[in-house]
Length: 68
Image 1 (spheres, rainbow, N blue to C red):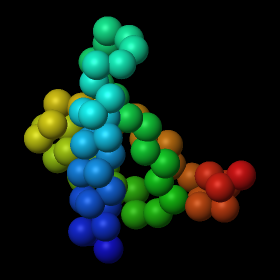
Image 2 (cartoon, rainbow, N blue to C red):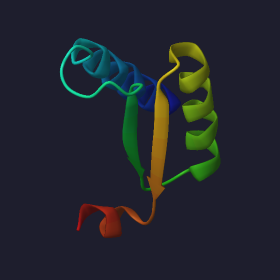
Image 3 (cartoon, rainbow, N blue to C red):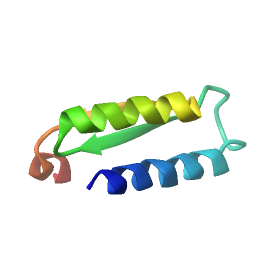
Image 4 (cartoon, rainbow, N blue to C red):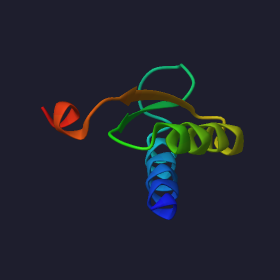
């Protein structure tokens, strides 16, 4: 399960990097919706931010609530 989150964050980082030249002049950031395992997700997000410098906003709730 952990590798899926890592893969998702990596793919997202690549997508953000590919869009780097389009739009606003601020630093790169992404929004991650999380429906489970908050502590693990927070650890992964911290590692991702440290490795890439990309800021991550985290929205956490029950998966059904997030889907709505």
